[in-house]
Length: 162
Image (tube, rainbow, N blue to C red):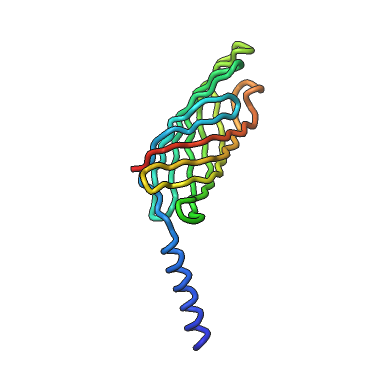
């Protein structure tokens, strides 16, 4: 009987400790994700919390350009968010996207699809600002062989939360 009471107290203490340290993510956040993989550019980024847990959807509409190509893409990601301590969170996710490119080297235009992973760290300030640094590896698929490749996309995000 002592073991059962001790086990129940341990489980209840763990749940209460988790609830005390769990940080809720904002229902909505909108801003910019600035960085680059395969060219420098920016993305308009929107995050929407889903469910009762710290999970969210992220949608990014972005453009990239350099001396070799121009591209516009839309990426959707599902993310899991975990609190580290205080306002620091880390997150991981997966998703997919579609886009259009204009290759200036070979005079090729076309559509592409991609799959992506996502891992990052963010800081949630006491006022409605969220700043993040993330790594989003992407694998692209298109009709042109030189656009079927791995792209390591690293970016800084600044978002207003509401």
